Image (cartoon, each protein chain N blue to C red):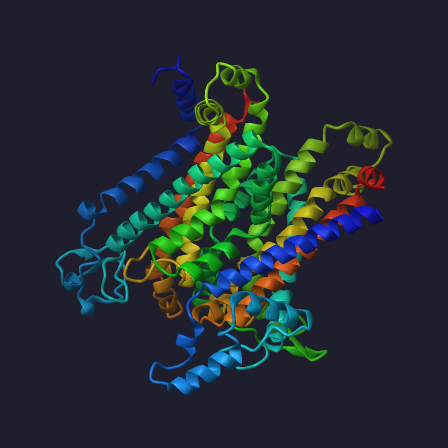
Length: 323
Length: 292
């Protein structure tokens, strides 16, 4: 188990290094931020002073090493636009994205798994067909379009829910959270539904496929033969057996939700990381883009690692093999 | 339609499913109105001289100063929305299909070559592909669109980069299975050159899973293109795709002028759902596990 863990950790480190180089080079190729920051009629001295201050005059590899060095010291540099440390900027925005993502993914799982299991349990019933049709649509409709329709229906036409921003927040440990206020929930609902719809469809499909496959199996037959109720069979046997791929997908989706949060946050002016990255791409704010991409990659690799470990923990066969 | 050839059989089976047939017909109609947009559309939306600003943001069914009815209303520049949608549809399709085709060729080549050569090259190629698959396509496209810049080239590069990995993965999986078959060995001992064997013998046998992936990926490309354009990282407002049109109309929607965003959105939706339904049917038919 320990050897497996070390091996996976080593792989993760290599991947992290490669992506950090790629991300750095990629972002370096985007325009010259000097031209964006300084007006064309600034004097040469001002230009030179700014170039020296941000280190744009050094060779590329030195800029990279400087970047990694500062990264290890939790210093992501200073935003060229806001003129504040990137770390502060990101920490400031992170809670908004985090609560949105968690509400969306958890909601999708809590709703999608029972619905999917039902659709797999009675695949020919009318409601199962309805669930599957809904999930097909949820699967193919672009996220931004769902967001627009939700705003149009619930904010513009019905006027039930606000169309943007975060609403009242509560400050806990120096960060602001919407999930603890009623007004916050009113603001959170539409973006969370928007972000979670795709995950919901995915969970439904996976749970359905797993349940359909398991229902005619010996496990279920024997469980039924022992006189357990259908509910117990589903809950204790089927759910446990289909949980493996669901856990993996849940983890991976947590990561990709971060990407799609960009779209949702833009539509609902949700002041999270996604909004920050879009704004920084437009203003060529390199330190912020770098920090965001490195952070997301890091999340991704960590989640992948945790999913692998969870797999081994959940599947006794793998546990024996990895010993 | 000849039932004897495999293709004829494929067509006949396809027509048996009413839903996918209807979906196919819808997609076909959308593609043809897009292709013939310059002749079908009541107005050339790019001809600034023909735009009448006094007619801006009019609701659907408004009789414009141009002497014809704007059945879907007009946008903020007084552009006839129906015409804008037809032209936008053409742009969306052109960009997505170009990107899809390039990604198909690139990905399939990489996958098949990796599977055939094996060893270090295979490991390297497939590692990069796996790494990319674990990274969300939208994020990658976002980054690339930002690097390469706005416009058709940047968007195409971003879409190709986000999609080729799916083709490479699929082609690799299929080619691995083909590689060990006897006809490959036979062809190699004729001897035919490696290139001939890879591209004339192995690749055609990997096509059916690739076609399935292609239908899904084209829908995905259209959706991704619209998303990027909506975020402002895709096509510029002078060359509006469906996504750009939706994005342009978004600010007006909050004041109740829904049609500028909603109608292009409905067309986008019908297109994507249609392609996905066709793709589902193609997958069911080409999947050897379901063969009756």
